[in-house]
Length: 107
Length: 119
Image (cartoon, rainbow over all chains, first blue to last red; front, side, top):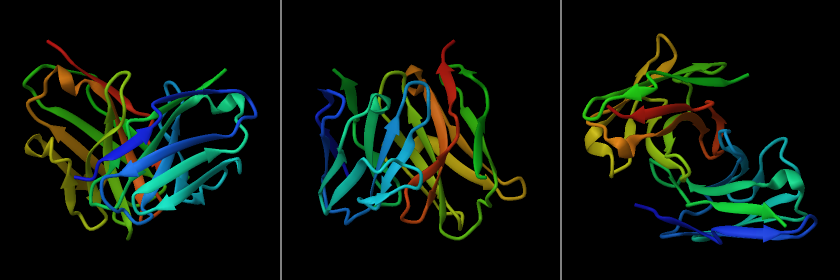
């Protein structure tokens, strides 16, 4: 099984800050990684696929990077609307695994 | 516009079988390179993939649930289903169906169905 580990589990930042979330895979997944944003009471929303490709309609302040086992999601300038939990997900295998989530709080 | 909608009982008794159906509109579940998944989220916790169904009808299951899970398709109704047997309170969760287009992530999700396991 491919395990995904996110850090930190919670982060608190101010509006306008640059925020980075890290995701590590237990083995190489090439670039088969996605990032999702989940707001309370809602289904997750796809932000980034193939590690660094921005989903249509997603603000450009979101970006992804990495390959192999190390990946990052960056929010270049945190906005109040970005209050959410963020999950990474690998889809290298025939079934998918998610990181445990990172809760982003606004200071 | 692609839409997915989960349906099924919201309450299931312990030891019984949880059954949910995902009805898909705006896309064919048989279309090449589409993969269809069931994902669940216990209250206040993270996301867990239960299993996946490919456009060709092949399935893959989370090893931790494999002995209790069956995912199947009804192409005539453009639906796919989840059966989870011998449920316990630990299976209480919001159950989502979602679509993955090869290499492009889970771009479409259902709204989620809360299933509570309780007597």
